[in-house]
Length: 294
Image (cartoon, rainbow, N blue to C red):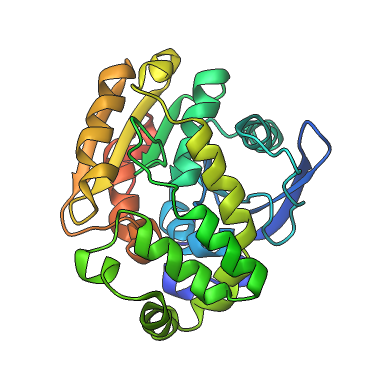
């Protein structure tokens, strides 16, 4: 097959399909490549399009299906009482529609991936990059009220700044900035990405409330995952997203391994897709893992 360079990915290289979830909500996904099916499930404040370069990097060995989760282009909106059960049903519907038995989840998508894998025996292999699993309050959500007040006032960039300032994961110098100044910094730093992120600010609250609702003192609930599970992280990420979290998950999940990628941070699946794809290939248990890009 042709080896697609992620930098040269065109609309003609993929096609978009959809399935209906258990509650009838339409869930869209983009497919490209050839080979065994692999699903990519992205994080909060990201669309499926943010993961197309990762999909292209993995498409040498797989038919990759990039999900547009609820609230994203082509998919339905979250229900008023949206829950992890809805998210898991959405992923299960894509797995049933594509026949894919391998899944990669990033951040909130990693949480959904693990929660789905522990509920349903759908996957042979599970890959998660810094899943949004909160253990003993490791993911702060105290910023939500201030964030929502700013959304109501129409201060969308200020709402995002509120989250960045109080998330607990930003460098100290960022958390010390007043919101008005941080808003200006983020406007420059985000550039063209802001338009797409801004559309997901309400969905971001819904998803972080799910994270908070699932906070637990330990990772024992994931001990029912039977799939080969690879827990990935970045060495430049905050410790709460890598070290202790990945170790606790690995202790709970029977067939699991941990790999922390040097020089990578939390958004590496979007910004350094080749590095993340290489880690996936290196940990594959099926014959597809022997193939590598030319």
